[in-house]
Amino acid sequence: MSALAGGVFGSSVDDEYTELRSLIDDIGSRSFDARLGHRVRPERFDDALWRNLEDTGLARLTSTPELDAGPTELAIVLAGLARHAVAVPLAETDALAAWLAEIAGLALPEKGPLTVAICDAAVCGNRISGTAADVPWARAATAIILATSTSDGFCVARVEPADATIDDGHNMAGEPRDRVSFDLSAHSFHRVDAAVREELARRGAWVRCVQIIGALDVAAELSVAHTSERVQFGRPLSKFQSVQHALAEMAGEIERARAAVTLAVAAASDHGFSAAQTDYAVTVAKVVLGRAVGPIITIAHQLHGAIGVTLEHRLWLATMRAQSWITEFGSTVHHARRLGRVVLGSENPWDVVVGNDLTGWA
Image (tube, rainbow, N blue to C red; front, side, top):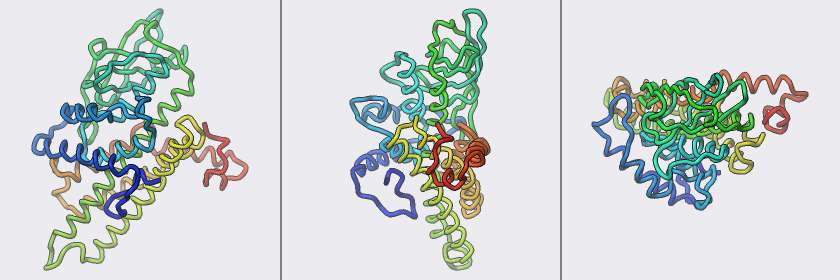
């Protein structure tokens, strides 16, 4: 699997996805350059980038059957765009909202960004109401897909932004994470199998893991470039042994994380998101990344000094996204406890750890 190949410590890859990588890098670079000097908190939706993604068919890559694209292609797109700190909800639109709407039999607008709001909801007569917190890009969405757990089961509905109350918020990186309150007729909701709820969470964790790899690659590249160019005491920082050790530690953490996420991409590509293999691989990836993100970010900012924490600096854009994304769709602790419970409940823990025993998974 070469979907996540790259980074300053990796070698260039020439395979069937080379043109896709080049396209994503070109689109992302142009978006990043156009926003230099114009970034604010919270981020503003990048209309120009979204139009480019729609024109090239990338906005709904895997949810458009005619494109015949799967998790591998999606991983390349998500990781590539994450490298450029884009301000669009591509993962939410394609991998989450469009997929969930199809499962529930909901019609969607042909164009425009989508998002998913996940929450518990209350049933009162023929009304269902609730409030979803930290909804990505709700303020920019043309439609919001509600994924609600109620006393009647797991239900899905489409709501127009104008029919909900949206309170603006954002994460540490400045990406919109809004609060969506709704009160809709129960007839608007479609009940789906509880397994769909689990797959939705798994898909969400998967896309965030892939995006984090893209952000961490940028942090590594910037750190190598900065320490090579910055001269202190008559020589570049990269010539100091302590700096070399720090870069080596960063490389090791990133490649360990890349290996885990590559397994998750391969599992989703080979078996689908509902499979036990993918459930296991995503859980492992979440745990490994959760342990790696902190040390990598710490090293990157130590090597950059104060300049790395300014709003316009590319390092800040990458590290704050990685730090925010790792908390979404299940914390590291949540996934580690789940992995631990499966291991402790098995007859042969080693078989669970290496993925030979999948009986405790989806």
